[in-house]
Length: 101
Ligand SMILES: [Zn+2]
Image: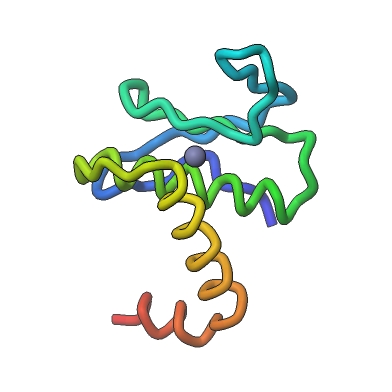
């Protein structure tokens, strides 16, 4: 499946870019980042497919939390990423049910 080029975060669309390298402030490399002021998410394309998916989930959680003015620390975003990953992967029927009209 083609990775999404945008996600919706609490009503605001964020563009998603898949790039080879995302440099951290300290010179290290990041799996992804979220720039709320530009409505932009970047995901490192050098990761495996599941890591890219999980990174996009993580950065989307950051975007939604930012849009809702939640001041979530990184640890909480990491926990939410794990919870939503397991929920979505293990419960496709639940996701379909939530999305149904
Ligand atoms: Zn994060």
